[in-house]
Amino acid sequence: MSTVLFIVETHQGKAATASLHGITCAARVAAAHGAELALLVLGADDTAARQVAAEGYGAAKVLAGVHEALGTFTAEAYGDAIAEVARATGAIAVGATATSSSRDALPRAAAMLRAPLVSEVVAVQDAGLLRRPVAAGRALVDTKIEAAPYLFTVRASEFPAAEASAAAPVETVAVGDPDPRGAQVLGIERTESARPPLTEAKVIVSGGRGMGSGENFKHLEALADLLGAAVGASRAATDAGMVPADLQVGQTGKVVAPDLYIAVGISGAIQHLAGMKGSKVIVAINKDPEAPIFQVADYGLVAKWEDTLPRLTELVRARRTAEA
Amino acid sequence: MKILVTVKRIPDPDEPLKFSGGVLDTSAVKWVPNTFDEYAMETALRLAEHVGGSQRLAEVIVMSICPAGQRQHVTQFLAMGGDRAVVVDHDDRALDAQTVAEAIAAVWKRESCDLLIAGKLAQDMEGNEVAQRAAALLGLPQATFAATVAWDREAGSLTVGREVDDGVESKKIPLPAVVSVDLRVVLPHSVKNGATPDDHAYQEGPRLASLRGITMAKRKKVDVVSLADLGVEAKNTSPIVHAEPPPPRPPGQIVESVDELVEKLATEAKVL
Ligand SMILES: Cc1cc2nc3c(=O)[nH]c(=O)nc-3n(C[C@H](O)[C@H](O)[C@H](O)COP(=O)(O)OP(=O)(O)OC[C@H]3O[C@@H](n4cnc5c(N)ncnc54)[C@H](O)[C@@H]3O)c2cc1C
Ligand SMILES: Nc1ncnc2c1ncn2[C@@H]1O[C@H](COP(=O)(O)O)[C@@H](O)[C@H]1O
Image (cartoon, chains in turn green, yellow):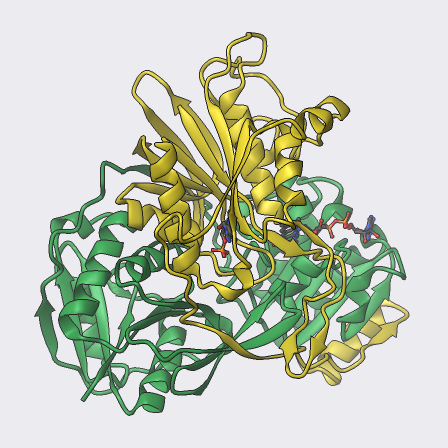
């Protein structure tokens, strides 16, 4: 039986939520090919691989690729390891959720395998026929692949999370000699926040240039905290330094699909819409009735945030208090 | 130091897409340079120039795989300040990312480059893969999604601030190497070359070509080569067989007040 490999990223020893969504897509790829699904966990030891295997997620097995060069993520070493495991297992397809790490490393592996890569898959149409959005979400295209192996990344927001199942067996797999090629990761400056990550939040409150300053974002944060929401932003807001860059939603930022997206002082440029128009319910608050954001909003309020956010926060707080 | 900057021509992203017969019709589009490549060019020029001094620290070579007769985007980059250009004469719509990366790697070798700077993403087809592929083919280290770049000329290395999902990663790579750039690399203080004063504030965004630049661009050398000249086979292993517009969102409504909004979110949309 042929194999579809899916690379699971782990966070504090457990499968990252984003990867769970990707597993669902990979299971569909495997089903389309009549192949079995194997999960690949890379690292300096096999602790995380064993954790993932304990949850199973419907996979036939979990492969542990262990090497000291895989302790810190670098695209160079991970790319080498992924290509090596793909060769050794004869996998017909290799996937991962489209995170910044897989977008960094998978194309390297693809080049070494001389294999095609399909980015940001949103639907599996058939064996080797994958659908993805292009041009800031203005078109959906189907890519046909005859080659084996091929690689793919998954847009997490388009697939439900895989659920734990019976435990899967763990096998160790050789990763060759992954080489960071002199690259050194000096550190990561993380944006600390008690709020849920953008890509996992059920509700997102997003601000744009219309907020005027980073200081004014506290009004959005107050509302977000009442709603248990994440805070997002447009490029204009992040470029101006109002909030950290990793809060940016859009073609070049995070792609999100929460139950509720509230856009405040955001005009709705095509690149912003590309990242949020999959949201179930969109609310727009903007003083300009012509703002394109109103074309995708389920509920639009033509007003200044100064005149509306305080009342909105008050009403939401009242509802929360009534519920408690 | 030789810096290779790649530029892809893309259909003007501000113009509507045309679908015909279940595929995208690009026969009559207006071609413009990919914005991320303009950012790559700006990065290369900031590394190459010594503001306040006279010497130039690097040669900047522009390259594109495109029909030789449609290379306005290359001319535009020469007008911005590129030194010379290589055009690989082939319709890139018929090539896969691997072939494009092979062509870039071949030009890199011919020119003995030290640094490749590419956009992180082509805005039209959104592959996000060519720079990484070229790095792998050349066996080089890479720093993708660069928001800041600092060049240590003595050590022969770059320290790059990379936009990752949960913050900014700082990665140090020895030259020769590959960098792909993100949006914030064109903010006023994002690029440092150790010669231009560290506190120099560049104008935000990619520079516009000056009138002088435009005149000079016409005289700059452009090498036109074929894939065959580079020993690269033209192929497409991942063709697009169908394209369609996304389903439209159902029309929304304008509410008159915050009270009405909250009421509707609670009872109609049931999300509060
Ligand atoms: C290659 C490329 C990639 C890009 N990627 C992204 C991306 O991933 N994400 C992204 O967001 N953008 C992206 N952009 C930028 C995008 O094109 C827009 O420039 C950006 O989204 C605009 O942000 P904005 O809506 O906050 O600002 P503006 O367009 O300036 O809009 C501000 C809005 O606020 C409103 N406003 C002003 N004051 C008030 C007030 N007091 N109360 C209420 N409303 C008010 C105004 O009416 C206006 O509609 C990208 C651009 C390029 C070229
Ligand atoms: N036809 C091409 N000619 C030159 N450079 C290209 C071409 N296609 C892609 N690139 C480069 O690769 C980057 C990433 O493209 P992609 O991986 O296709 O999203 C672009 O920003 C360009 O710098």
